[in-house]
Length: 400
Ligand code: SF4
Image (tube, rainbow, N blue to C red; front, side, top):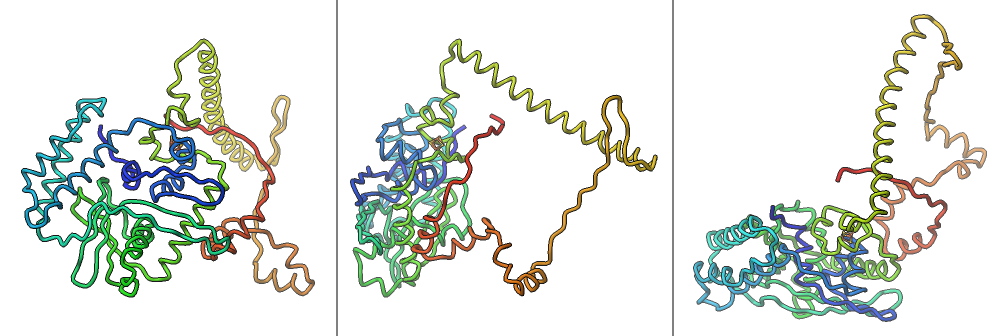
């Protein structure tokens, strides 16, 4: 079946710019930053190691849809008709990128639907286009180190509106995200920074600059505006991600996006799946199967033991005894209770004795929440206090 990956990832393929970061300066793109956020190892493959991989059918599809949208809006009042737009899409369609004929037909039909729906809901001649596929590079300065970084990208479309402007990014994803994700959308924030570099006077008109994601399959857009504070936060967020990249060991972070990752065959989390079988592999397979079987049996046995424990407790209750004697061992009834102290009362008592601080324990979950509210310098200071205190490796079992 032909599926679509996360919206940002589709754009990523299209807009990825090669990153080079000698010493402290970094030239990056929004899509590279986004790739790092979703999976640092994928970022390493793409950006640091520059491993070339075959573009996925979804990425090729996304590029052609974007290209068709550009075609539709090029030409001012003499925009192409629906027939011409469909013709453009069809003639640029490349069935060879698909391995499966049914997927290819399905994707083609989806593309046609998107274009037809666009014409049904929009009159391209009415759009007041200022720029299409607008390339940008913005410079960001790290407030602390004064290092300069450059972020590049391409804005799909900029429109003039009655009061201001609309910055639009097209999405071909099936699902529309909640409005909240648009309000915190880093991509749109970076686009706004790029827009303001070009139109600096508009910084005093932020309320009238709409940032929109246009979901083509739904013919619906989600929009938001930004304040000057949010813009500053966006700048800091980008700098923070750049710091993380510089300090990163590039771990693999698995997510549903792995399904569309073109590096699966070299990723340690997936490559075993693609390995050609050898004699050694037969042995490995046997060990894996034995381990899985043992885990399965242990699970069944744990269930049986829990049932038997329930019955034994019932017998003890009936017989009014605390211990039952087996052939070689004795089963004894134990009683476990868990209490929690009333924190306020406890605090009052221990504070009088100056002992409250000694019983306070770090609450990791609470700290994580507090960290989110802290400014970047404090966050970094706290991060520096982190120490690895224990490391162990285990196994987890998931369905294929
Ligand atoms: S397959 Fe998944 S975990 Fe591996 S590099 Fe790609 S996105 Fe990361």
